[in-house]
Image 1 (cartoon, rainbow, N blue to C red):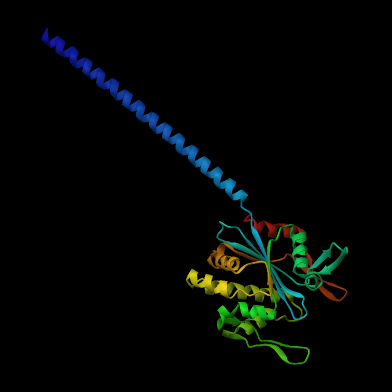
Image 2: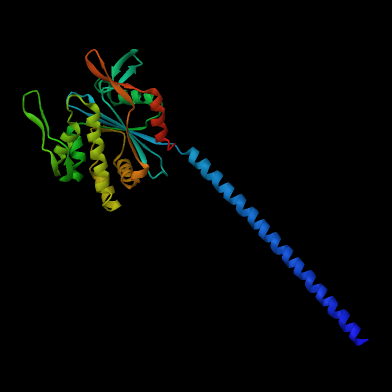
Length: 296
């Protein structure tokens, strides 16, 4: 009789153990399932938030203008930066680009808009051409360029060919030898000014080479040194970019990844119109260039 009771008691205990084990396994599976669903929802929400954040981010466009001795714009570039991006896009414009003067409804060259309508004229022309909004700009003449690049004095650089040019008085205003050398601030200016047989694209390529080399050079410096240098040596002729903004801008360019950055020339082709070389914009390719500024 005692054996039967013990057996029944043992059976009850075993059944209870099995019951609790099943409950434990069920609860464990339930917790794992809920955790998996929660993690999945969090990941989807995070991706949606990231996508939404990315779509909201818009580039800031900076217009940089180089002014020659005749007050024409002979160097024009638009820098595009997105805050959380680790790259940038710089679009260079041939100064002989044909644009439409909407006020007078006639075609003019982009370089002429500076002397006729000032920096606002160049800004409006490029905004109409690219269908973008430019908030910041800076104009540099020869003197202000030299002052603003004093931080880069004695810059090691390879000049790819002999460059010589005489002014109206017959004196050399550009005289650079071919080869690896240290460039002074005035020689850096001479390098980016030099144009051979009115070859606008070659001159833009010079400007891009120098800009890339400077970015690489400063990439070896401590960030605070670059920031201080950019702050104190920012001396454009005319600008609505403060020294602090310029310092932040230059630091972003220097810290950007080269593989995520683009140097492009306004797409188009050169044509001879009334015996003058004129850059005609390729509207189809232009859309691809604008897409680069949006990280697309």
